[in-house]
Length: 225
Image (cartoon, rainbow, N blue to C red):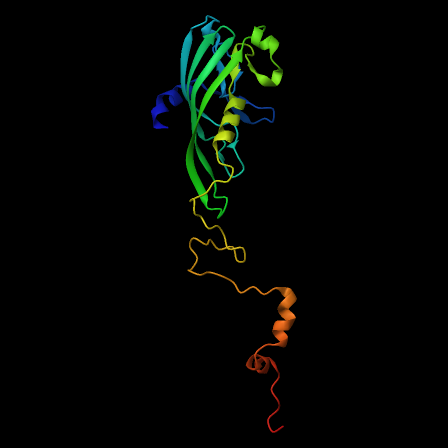
């Protein structure tokens, strides 16, 4: 994360604040034309549709929302590092590179907090309007440029979701929780267990209890009787 401190400072200096619809303040970043864009939206007008033209993006932004799965994700507003190359090709803009961020979550067995890092590799083509790719592909099958901008948010969300484990573990051999009392078995005393009697057999247990157990449970006779 520290490697991108310069990019983060630049992005911060270019940012401004604008009132949102509820009267609060929303953090926004203007592009060269003054338009407001999201942190994962990149302006590619500088490429000029000249095939072979390239530019690089090294930027640290705040995640606009939680990105990941139920048990493990990049938290909202956590730093996300973008290290990308944008290349103009005949049919659009090819985006390649990595996106990384710190993750937080819980072990799926013992529910202990988990911290880590996820890095995903992107290779996405954003088709030019009226290009052959745009005209011959279904809407859900490709990404498209809109007003000379590419929106990486959905690509990042999909890539992170595929990279993260569905059932994260604090350790491969995590024993989980005791199903009876909920204690973490990893820190419980050796041989931790509970004597569980099937309710269907409880009556027989009471009937055939040891004599001393029966005497202890029976009322004492009055002295002299």
